[in-house]
Image (cartoon, rainbow, N blue to C red; front, side, top):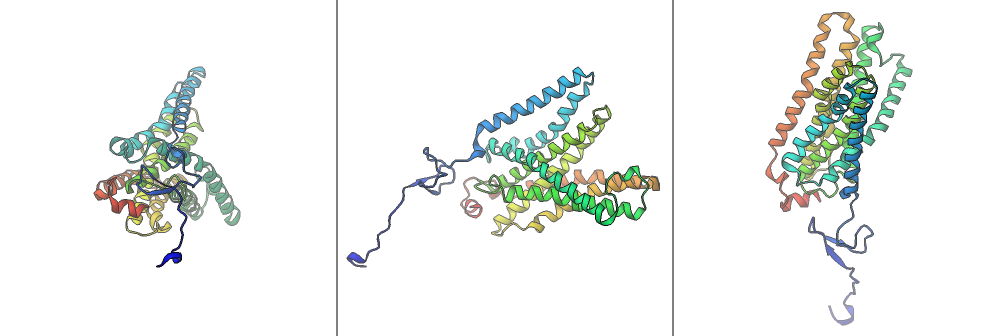
Length: 330
């Protein structure tokens, strides 16, 4: 190329990100003066606010229990939040807290709580449409004497198409679509951590709703059963969703909705369906109670499967300095 034929390119200032080692255009409005990308998920003010709210909730449960002469309300408050915190400790904080900043994990946990609200309205809408179209009532099956066929259809629809499909889809989209999900993660296992945090956020609000809808001492039994079964099931499906998304990205594939969710929906729907059939068909004989016993093993097996899958992950899923890992996730 000669003289005047040389093209002129106007360069913009470039800085290097401390976290990813990639170039960032300094004219980008998301770039801060300190040389780092702004990220609301790293805001420690959100973290402190979260712990303050949790503390106030526990203190309020205890105070209300003492004032109303129902001290078990304090235990209910602890049981409604404690299981999620314990599971998240083992999945995240015990060995892998350096992979994702704590404010970002708490942020995803809070978005799981927020997402539970529109999800509940969608479930109510689907239940109403099902009742309006078929004439079958999908709620209160144990309080009415319905034909066996109606009970089975209503229970399976409520379990698979209302509860499982809506709730597992929420967990999937929290990770894939929300900016706090797979955007700018450091490792593949970071996706599993964030997916589990979102699932446990949803499970916590659902847990509070179920436990405090009846403030009698019988709520303690409900709280204990949900702590041992329902919350671990939500955690297990969150782990499986995160693992499936991480594996798809590491294999250079786009995460597939159905490939990611078929197993979580199957596990969740089977658990809910067996419990609903047990309640709806309990008048048919004592053998129906065996369905409920089978349901109790599903969350335990699902959680064991998720933890074993984490143990079998290749080391590059956890390596912060893996060039291949960073390139694929980017």
